[in-house]
Image (cartoon, rainbow, N blue to C red):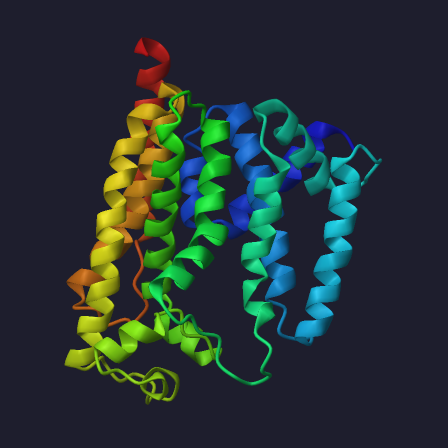
Length: 299
């Protein structure tokens, strides 16, 4: 398969599935956009394999192992007809992306498969454990992205890591009800205990029931952590290449707006799912495109 067709395949996946991410992708110059879409398509495939609840966890592990073996062969130079592998191999070469980061990304999306007790809820004991999960599924993506965005100051790596934590904590807050319906609670167990919220209260609540005062305080504590990590996004922006800053600004603005929606709803993530409207995302995207044009003309 030709490279341009492989990238077109990845762009199509990103446009269909990426939601918040896609509005940032289109604010990037073409070569960087192609590379980001390739990485997203790679991440999407790994996530889909790990989350396929139509088969057992053991079967999912085997599927991922088979897919990973094929990826490692392609990354080593073996011929492949997988359009995602073709595109990612090119992106890795063009933007000097360490293969270890892609391996960590897959480690992240498969963490939920590591729980040994069948039927037991997926949980994290403390924030340090949750941080590790967020690092693998979100910060690693940020560390890949800044290599595509372009940077020279090594401080960008820590800021990208913490920006990823902010994004993933926002996702976790938004998805508390949905995750609980899938027997998953990402809010740390020690923080549940500190706020006198039981695991059963989250897993077996009556659908459509708003949070009580203790649950709101628990959710607020996570939102406050996320808000602190969003400060790193502001530190990161001036450290990446000027032509890439509008795309990152779009992404940060959308995710931060989502967190603000949750706060404005007084942390009621149970009766409705917080979201940023398509109209608002489009407005943010066009703002990013305008900034990109300005950066190209005067950067």
